[in-house]
Image 1 (cartoon, rainbow, N blue to C red):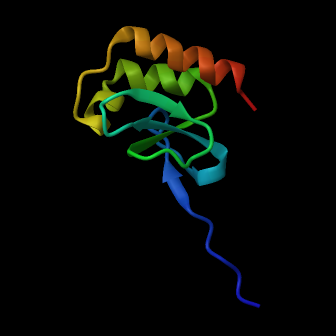
Image 2: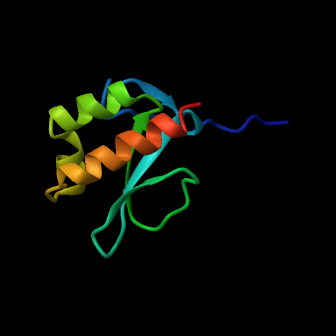
Image 3: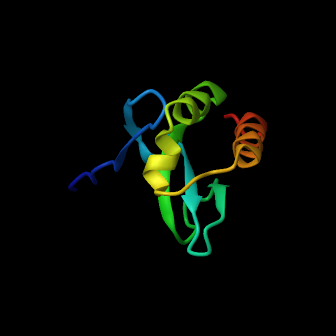
Length: 90
């Protein structure tokens, strides 16, 4: 049998290429709302971050999330994202 390729994605925080299942997807939905997509199936533009608050903070500090989504992201949203990633850290 032929083995399937593992989809790889790049973390916005540390820049490491990792299997998609090891990362958390942050998504900008068509209505402009930004949220954490733990299922990986929400509709919208996605960006990936390692399952650590440190990587999210690096991505936020370097404005990488804003560039990935081509929009300004309020700081309240970043606080919510950090809280959700810390709660679901696995």
